[in-house]
Amino acid sequence: MIGFAKVFWLEIVSLVRSKTLVMLAVASVAWMFAAPFIAKGDGTADGAREMFVRYSLGGAFAILLVSLLAAATGSLARERAAKRLQLTMVRPVNHMLVALAKTAALTLSGASVLALCCILMPFAPGVGDGVLGRQCSHVLKPRLPSPRDEARDMYDAYMADPETPAAVKKAKKSVVLRLLENRAVDHYQTIATNDTVTWRFASAGTAAEAKGLAVRIRFTNQFDVRQDVRGELRIGPLSGVVSNITKAVVTVPLSRRAAEAGVAGAADGLSFSNKGSSALMLRPRKDIDLLVPADSFAWNLARAYLELVSILAIAVAFGVFLGASLGRPVALFVAIVTLVVGEISPSVIEQYPDELETSVADRIGLVLTRFAAEVTRPVAALQPLGRLASDECVEPGETARVVLLDFVAVPLALALLAGLVLPRKQDGL
Image 1 (tube, rainbow, N blue to C red):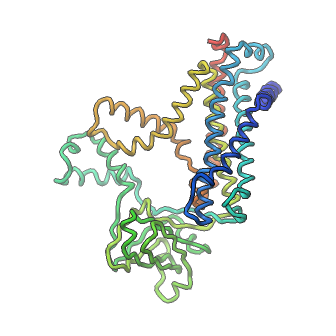
Image 2: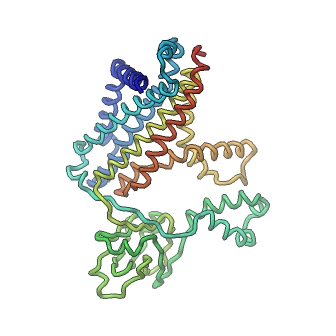
């Protein structure tokens, strides 16, 4: 552990003397305070806060992520090329500890700058003095079959449908199932006038007893929201009235007082009665959320911070591993390409959900893209800033899993791999 501490301290000193840490802090804070004057919101306090979280704090995190990834790829590669790593290895220091110490030092530097940005958040223009006192909510989704199970249930009926294209019927079953699974997320449910539907939620009975319970409804597009949408929501003894013509997203608070005049709804589900003049189309998986009050924005920010630091840790560990294995230019190129591919893979898969109308080259590209998406999913799927901006709770269970996996397990594994590679790379090649 003495060797770990010395390498850790030397890396911190190097970051300070090279002014890397200072420049990171200045660039991140400067962007955080300048972004509100560049990106304009909708003129409301909530809009300004959301824009700040997504683009100001998010931009500062992006600066840290790219900068630390670049620094990590050069940390070991530069020492190998300059023949300085051999001097370190003269002392009884384990190769794995060298990689782990550099990972820890770079991660701590990024965590310190990110903490500074979070501390300065209440002082940012347009954010508001009471931002830390806001309340976040647990977001409960309707309890529905998984998209994969729904695709399997729909397969036989879809293939027997005469309107199904011939190319689809000739395709492999796995391709068609993937196509149906991708479309299951956008499955619409039609609610006719004077009709009532019920969506079941996990822990709905407990949620109905909470104060400040609300329902968030997203409408499909701006054309649909211009029709007269009216109805009533009920869950247990609580109810709320939906009245909307212009908004794309409506949050309806539920109260016990409104339910006293009518019949109580089901205790284990949320019921909606369409009182409008036309049918309403909703996607239950995307458009219906039950909002259960959680804790304050400050605690939510702390959990989001831990997840962001975990993302920094896994990126830095990957960069250090590349620096131990490759030359600095190649390591930096591989790191940046991996980062870009991990970010764009979900969009590519969404735009090209199947191989029915693609060439052989496109099919190979899709296979590689899906592989990249699966490998980077543990990091790419994390969106703590999006939930923070929407006052959605960054769940403690998810944060604990992310910290354990991305902050501890994966960096340890990458440091072990770097330790195995370093003895073969000390010649600087």
